Length: 425
Image (tube, rainbow, N blue to C red):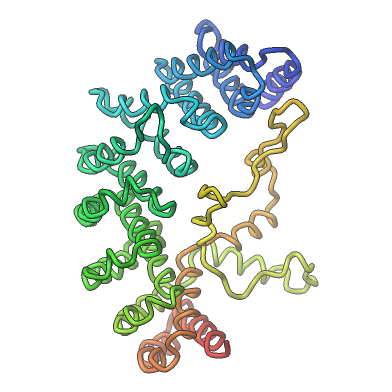
């Protein structure tokens, strides 16, 4: 289907927004019209996701029909339809909250026990997104019980599943409840930590990345739980910071940035400086994206910079990813405009398709990566431990600055800049 046809279908669907019970029609097309093309039904499911707020103003009968229809679609034989229904489920869970849709949560958790691995993974994928986006909303009592009281033990057991995807989902789901001080997790905190250590050497990089993420979040929320094993944790995170998979390395590097940012943890970090600082220095080598950004700067060097186009010299933590609002939910930039009828009229994800080359490079320049994370961590270490750092880094810095490879020399210069900025603070 070409772009014109797809655009026409979307416009036609938009024209129906004023029709009463509009979302019920969308749910019906998605679920009960198998004679239609999969792409049409999938587009309808996407449109339903963008209009989930309409369910709040719908009659109880319509709301119940839509919720039941979406759950049926999630069991469809088509992967495209299941994926579309999965996105709808995540959106409706956010709007309705689990307290008003307990049957959805129950179905997803029950699907984790199916013998069909594809359906298991599909259900866990949805649960992971829900845990990431709505951790606080899931930590509630429904019908006299707290769903997380049986979900957390279930996730812990699935962390040893033969499927790497299932293991990855399990560790991820568990970690997302740490920043919101979820009591259901802290009741099993020792089992959780044992689970993390058991998965630390997993063959799958996605699992290891989530292990590193969990350790970062635990360090920020419950550092006392890690301190007794800090020697082992530190060795593992140093090893992971050098992982060939950059996603794993970046998540591990976040550990040192989080460690450095917490003044109360300084006495525990100081003995590790001799090992941590050289590893951070090795991470401060420009990657392909950084080189592309620098190339763009060189090509327009003769053109005066606009005020909005001047890029920051130093980078802060990506900790905004873990920031929470007053309800404990992750704070994220709005992704859509809300129309007069509650519909989402523009999804910013679509705008990404229209970035020109310069905008693409500018966007890359602000993306958090291993080099920027290491530079930010070293910057803070220079503030906290100026004298100690000067005793640790001269030899490795000299090796960098005298290297025959310009990227190595550049990383040494970048490190000197970070240390100078930190020392001047």
